[in-house]
Length: 194
Image (cartoon, rainbow, N blue to C red; front, side, top):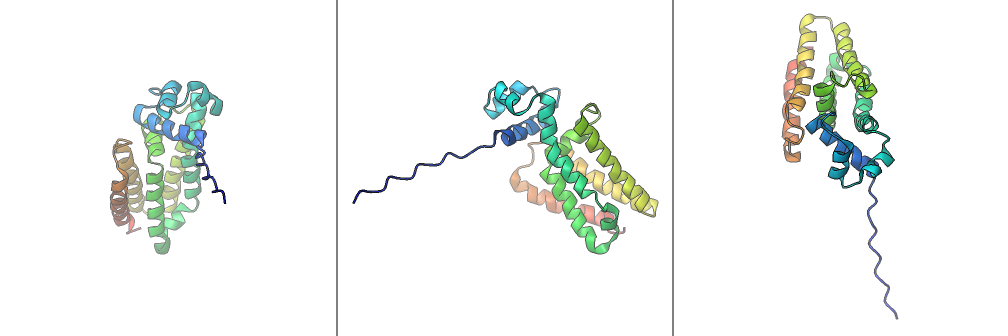
C-alpha cells in the first residue's frame, strides 16, 4: 500500500494592509508624521514602496487607515459616559474599559495627543480631537460640582498622559498588565467620590 504524501505546509496568508498599518502606526508614533516617509514604512515592513501605494493611495491615506480603529472605538466608548461615571455599579467597568482602550490604542493615543495640533488639517485627527472635546463637554455639563469635574479631568487626562509620556516602544508586553492594574487603581481612586 503506497504511503500518503505529506500534506504541504500551508503558507500563512498575511494581510499586507494590516501589517502596513501596524508598521506605519509604530513609525508615526516614534518618528512623527512628517518624520516618516512611505519608503521608510515600506522598508520597515519588508515591502516595496509601490506595494504600499497599491494598498494605500498616499501617506495620508495610510495614516488615516492606521488611526481609524482607535478613533472608531473612542466614538463608541463615549456613549453615555456620564451615566457610566455617576453610577456606582458602572464606574469600575468604565475605568477598566477606558484603560483598556488606552492600552490597546496607545500608539494612536500617542500620535493624536502629541501630534494632533500640528496635524489638524488631516480629517482623522480632526475627528479624534472632536471626540476628545466631546469627552470634556459631557462631563463638564453632566457632573454637578467643580470638584467632580476636576477629579474626572485629572484622572482621564492623567491616564492618557501616562500612555503618551512613555516612548511608544518602551513598555514591554509583560509590563502592560502591571501598568494596567496601576492605572485602574489610581483612576478609580481619583473618581470614586463622583
